[in-house]
Length: 147
Image (cartoon, rainbow, N blue to C red):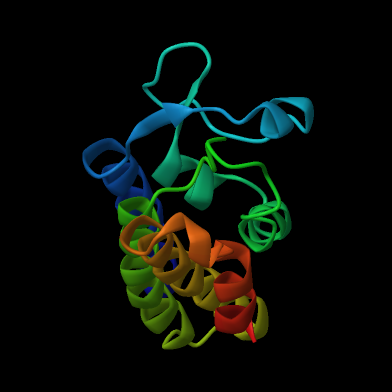
């Protein structure tokens, strides 16, 4: 019963966050070529940043977070600081509840995912706040957070 409640709560929390906190952003061209991104309530050519983070394959999501910054200036990342902040906070809550159940499960990959979300969020905020000449690479911050 405990596991069922945690599973239902996790799914409900992901959908609610995607609906309430998700932002429709332009899908980066590289993501379209890789068939990455979740449209969840967005028009064609746009993706929901929170839904993409929560509902895409975690290994692909981590890979795209780590590659933020290799694109040319002015190209959209697909991730937003607010979306990654929401995902970081909610993912931490979901990890705590899932880890507290009696079902054996790993915490290694969720920890990497959580760190990449938090580091990527911080890197995107630095990129917005600091001058372009500083050449902030948000993917480096995601990598540091993941380790």
